[in-house]
Amino acid sequence: MKRTLTIVLAILVAACSSPAPHFFQPVAMKSVEQTYPDVKKTILLNQVLMTADFARPQITTLGKKDYNVKIDEFNRWSAAPEKLIQRVANENLSLSLPNAVIENQTPLRKNYQYAVAIEVQEMSGRLDKFATLKASYFIKNKQNKIIKSGRFSQTIEIDGDYDAYVPAQSMLLGALCQQIAKDIANLK
Image (cartoon, rainbow, N blue to C red; front, side, top):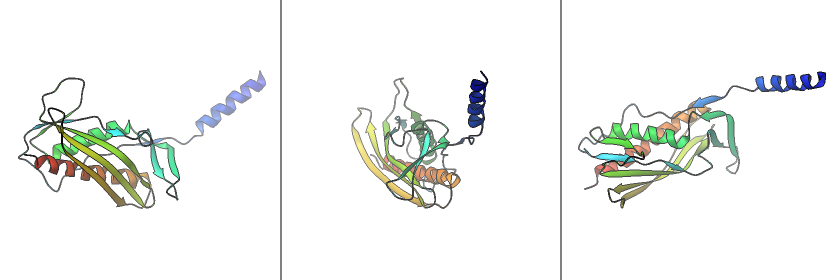
């Protein structure tokens, strides 16, 4: 009995001595370089797709070598990364297309002119060097036919920790949405 109590106390002490987790979320841009007020369409933003290695609550970065991957248990996204990206993309597209209606995909049938699908291939970086975002996007018409597609690949230099990495990823998401907004504005 005494031995069991000692083991239970040891486990409790070990559990309480773990560092507290930190939660992060990307944020939308405060302003944009270019707006497209002539776009007055309803745009459906589909659920964001991510590869399994980046669609996890732990923030994934690279180690000292490109083949090392760090999955930090105590620095996490505040929600599913694909949901956070969809929310930020919605806000960013709303800034770039101020007269358009941007709606997230839901099970309800919606009346829209264009749908945007984003597939994130890489959302990573090295905390002391850079943050990278690589994505493909597809703009579809109401008949679900792809009428425009594009690729985005950009890297931002950083020097720091997660407090530098997450804002850099936010900036990259903003640049991706600017590119999507420009393509939507150029559709005839």
